[in-house]
Image (cartoon, rainbow over all chains, first blue to last red; front, side):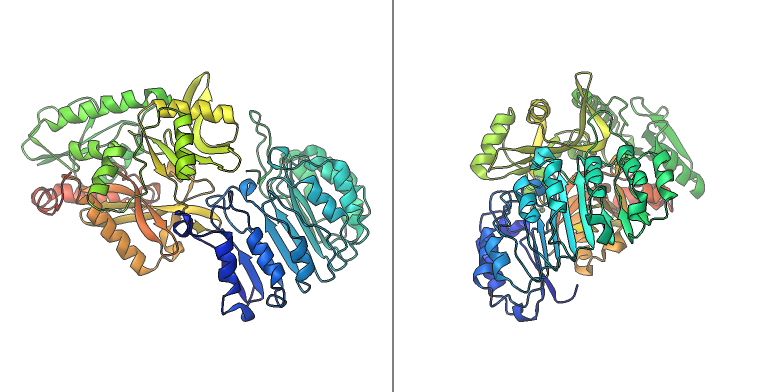
Length: 283
Length: 344
């Protein structure tokens, strides 16, 4: 990515309570390089489990003229050394989405306190949410969105313990959104009900226009693999079926490899008899 | 002059040290830990290896370490012997609290030690809430490696807790495993943390490690005879990076560390070794802190010289130890006393 800048704090910046989201928002606002930057990444803004990024989000929304040239916004780019993903305190993006009319790519990490509001945006081409558990409320906001240029939608659904309180019915509503006219990449992964997700997606109309279908990082098992085998005819046009990080047996992996579909089957996980199978990102 | 390795049969340490000796044509006698070399010649030089505990029960760790340190005291009393690393220096680094206190006293930058005793997890939680220090390592005071280490995290906002550890509970006993796992169930965490706190342990601040390809890393330096002998990055998806836990060892050159950082690491190791009398070789775990990659010592281990990447390749750590041991006169005079600036 060109013209990209990441704003973040190191541990020593905030360990004594000196820096937080409000100070980072100030620093972004006053960066003299701002006019040359098209892609902004916001990393750790201090004690991110105790200190929401709302001041940063508000700063973007309230100064939209200054950020009108920004194409990509990634808020929450941090590793678990800095904060558990499920502990990142996110915020309400409704005003930001209304204000940054030229934004093309929005990536959000963390789902605590996350709200997207009314998702009407004529230019947004990709939306990704990386989290340990996506709330039902956010799934429904996306289900009701109007994002006519959206090409890529990638959602980590996560687990109930870390905020996923939705059901398969909510996923159904999401993929029945008729406004996804440009969608080429659909990612519904990192789920503890990955087999059911596969089933509902493959039985919907959304698949026919896609180029990439991503069910990676979840607890996909032989059951999900069988559903894929049963619906293989619907998937032949895909450029990629991404299933990496899965719990499919050797036998079913062989069957999938025989299909005339480009499938990523990397990262076969061992079934955890003791604690049960977990998606890749849950903490 | 003769060389004796006091170690343990069936370990890589013994096999590769003797392999190095064979390749160099140096004769080395071997004696099992716990027994004493018989008919010691004048000018005998001894390398002391650590025992490899077969018992994974953490309850027994203190007892096992005590047994070993008693043995070190006994063997150290034999004035006929000279040591690659003196038993006193080995004991001083086996005691993580003492080791850290010596380093702090001498102004060596270390990962911060919390100077409190926590009788149980409630006391720990109180401390965290009062001091807003939410990320901690809890480590057994004695021992090395990842045995019994807990990386503990407390969420001030919600009270949620997460730990990363290689400890597991099997048949009612806390045991070490080779796998790090994450635990978020409060009852399990309370049970485990209360158990570790009931043993001798130290608590340190958990400083975030730098990242390489989405894995966090720290650095293991093997320092011997006044220079860096080997350096390897230890990468992990978890906060505990110990190499014996199936973590990835990474060629240090891939990190492209600036020369200034390497120089600061060298200075740090030199200063740290100078704090311990009779210490010529040590494994030093180093964290590179913040944007400036400021090196600070996580731990030091007088017996931290086993590096798989080395023994399976050049085996130069052990070979260079042997060369220095053969050159006994230089060894005895050159590095054990005169070059030491500070003693504990």
